[in-house]
Image (cartoon, each protein chain N blue to C red):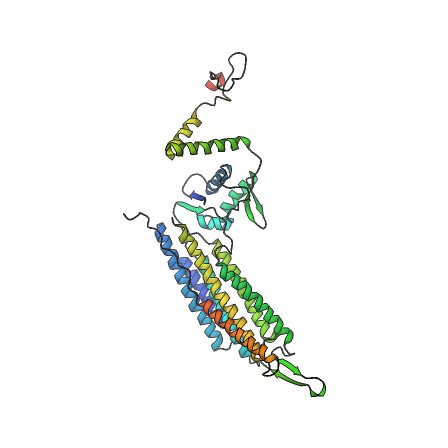
Length: 153
Length: 291
């Protein structure tokens, strides 16, 4: 699958940040595998019509984040980085969600809207405050949450 | 003075390239981008052929590399295809440098790595490698077998007092091999640079990926085609001359015939390669599908 990068030079976000965030998203999303070669800075800059330094800064920030590595012979390649089991689990759940949506005939926009709505819901795992003895809720149990005084301020 | 036609053609190519870079306009849509790219490629290819031919004719007409020496005319003839190849490649390189750039607020690019040989036709790359190896062997062999003057071949038959020797010239010794080697090395460096420019130049914005790939493949094809043709013509010429320098009798006669025929075939192959048609570029898909 061919991945695209788009840059809006009129947007308030600097072009290097747009490039960085899109590539980082592809790496985190598993669309760019470990070892995948990125275009040369000059080629990507030429394709996007931006200065080579813009792409160089995006690559440098990606390298600083451990997402890519510059190698003399192969150029800039994606690195696996540290293992992220939580992200892997979310990725697997997303794949299952996409599969179910396809099977159920739910269109893409609806799926994205459902995911966005789910992300906007309160975080029940971390925002929950024990009311009584601090026992953690087990699987399948519903815990009542109450905003803490700090949250309400 | 020897390099005057070559320099004139290169200066003219540089001026045309600077002019093209100065007046190029921004395409307004994907379709006009493709059209502009096709037009640019066509103009560049035409300029490369015209300027290359002018430099080659100028080199041949002025006997630029003869220098009044014996055998100098042979060197000039040997370098005419190389001069054509050098000017042709430089003009194509300038064309890649002045390729239409993306414009507009939102730009898009594919996140793919492009190497210098990715777009080059594999058959031409293999042919270039093979012909280069043969050229090096012919030049090295000629340098080892030639007489002290570097352009004659002496064969001896018999032994003792009955030994007879015959000397034939021209023969592709170091006298011819050195300028050919230098010229072909310059051409090889320029071809590598031009292929790098082809890989690095801006992509053409189009919904149809085949158009962008075909445009890049056509550019690489133009670069390699003429360079390989020049290489084959020179190598074939050296082989043929080596064949004609072999004695007319004895076992070397057959070697001479074989080298002569092989050289002619290689030259002919070079001419055919130089006339190969550039791969077709498919038409860009319309922006709005026609019902």
